[in-house]
Image (cartoon, rainbow, N blue to C red; front, side, top):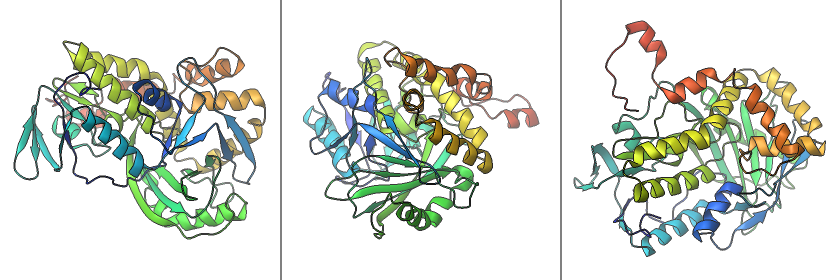
Length: 399
């Protein structure tokens, strides 16, 4: 968008494209809407309409992908090797300049590169993921309170027609502290993975094979194929501990902590925030302030509630097992399934009025009391425990 708008853009990336990235390779309806608005939908994607949720006992429920007033009833599956290269080529075609170097650090508006050179611009956009160097050096992230998760992804020689989210109990009535997935992929390959809260970050890699055995036993997988191209990565979610922009630095996607805390989606949020960054820079005299307001209005309510729910359930495996079983049973009621889909996928804004929308709004209303801590950490993400121990002190935070 920036290059199309006439800005001089330096696209700095350490990777040589096409490159792989640990991801579920699934783009939700809001992300599809952004791609279509910008004319950037890649070819060769797999189009999906619904999502299948699999309970711990193998019982399934179908969550519909609703048509909204601002998004389509479409989910896209596309490997990141294809998708990211497609977006990069579009930026280069629009006039962006590629700089294939690792970012070593940030000094104000000057980005230091690993080869000893530097790039300087009017603004710096940090779209460098959960471990963002830009966010760190700009003083926009408090690592002590960031809400993190870790996920492992692999590919299987298996044809999968629809996306699956799987609640798993390695031990009966004790839920895995996260969830698993099985998503469609091209060329007869499926994307499979496990994600867990940070406190259990070692478990996804350690228990991936046991999870695959479970999928095979309950009939979700037709064969017990060996996983290929296994890789993992950290997620930063819920906007906790991160300021989205200050001065000449703006953060997008994972760098801003915009991953959905309930189901782990990050591509839609990255696309929407990237577009919003571009619009703020091209149109506003103070892009950082304008962009922060947009982030707060667009993602603040859902992300704070989602982060609170994740906090409450992450250390309660028995309670999560009970709730997940009950959800799958209740999800067989059409209105419940529709509401679950709207709420869980953060589709309330733009949802068509009706029973599903009304039911989906209830968790946001009833959970705001529970989410007071998260709203405070989003609004002023300082380490409150340290402040209580040591008293007020100068801070690098700029809000």
